[in-house]
Length: 293
Image (cartoon, rainbow, N blue to C red; front, side, top):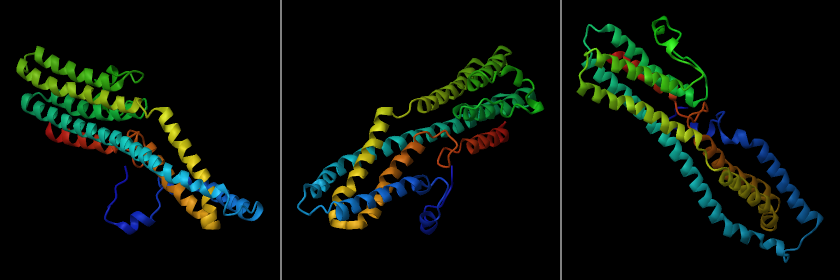
């Protein structure tokens, strides 16, 4: 995720980033511009359509449909942002859950039990990194290349659901401590609430990732924008002449940019500039857990 200062207007407006919609839409904008010029030449110079032609009434249709397309795009962007924000809240919950678990373990575990402290110090952050890689559809054993993790690595099968396996290791370790009477039943219940939260967060993130916006809805908006833009120069040539070309191109840029932005943020767990900084959040979890335990 790219950080920026929203108060720096000049930089935000004039600095073009790799993720800027202007770069992505550049070729399409050129096509729309040439198309609009062609329509203007065809109607004004070749066919010489008069101002009394029914064609000049086409803008009435655009006036009626402008409200509809505005509602569709507002709903589209709001839905996409809700998915992005829900993903951010879930990862914030993961940070808090990891901290709370580390805090409780730091108070419950005996100071002399360095083995258990070392296990949780390494395994709790591994869950965050494993969830990140899982949501990005990568098969990895991140953080398990360290010699300190030799006891954990054999228990993880990268071909299976890695976050679930890490959560299983955490619960098994807590259960072993209970059986060894190093923690009480009440403490087990307290720790169990935090352990359950890991799987709840993972499931909620998977729901966002595996449930995209319905194809028919996304397809309809794209077709609607294309039809709306394709018919714009037909009627506005009579009032704008060749100036209709840059104006139609700009309208296309605005409408298509909203759709592109919605497409990008509706999947918050990717690697684009506007996606969630899961790597940074995972590193923060690792740092905080190591400080606590």
